[in-house]
Length: 205
Image 1 (cartoon, rainbow, N blue to C red):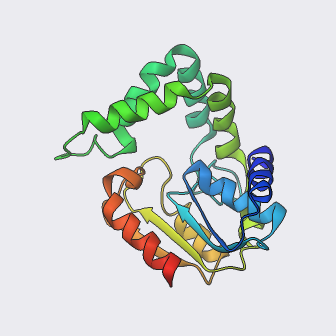
Image 2: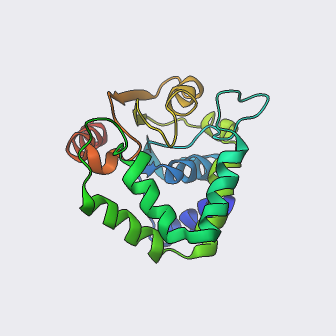
């Protein structure tokens, strides 16, 4: 995760970006947190964490609400065995909440997710499972000193809200937490109109 954050810092400095609204989705939220933890907020005006993994995904003695390590070991094993099927299973199941009663699966969303997954480097996505699940962002979140928006669905089966958004809110007391009732992990697609509205309102506030 340090590598992700440092790459982001290099890009921001190369483009000489200032007063930015730095927002990240899922693992990208961890990248935002680690960027602020390592590089500060001199170029950041506001931050956003969307369905984000911080503070810590994996279950530990100090993080009893996390997911068991076996879950992530299983993802890596499935990635090695048949990553194409893994991406189809995630997208058609928990990612967009298509496994819930009454859900209306979108083949377009499923196909888009699969294409994005298969386009990414296999080693990169395999290694990222450890990066996003075992990195502890607690100290990074404590360094957030800019207005911060946290958005999360309360039916997120990938990154459960209690161990993620609600725990992050406790570490960033000044943050604004918006909860989407019934929202899955992939609210960037399933709730895109509401999410765009909330992000724009926060950016302009």
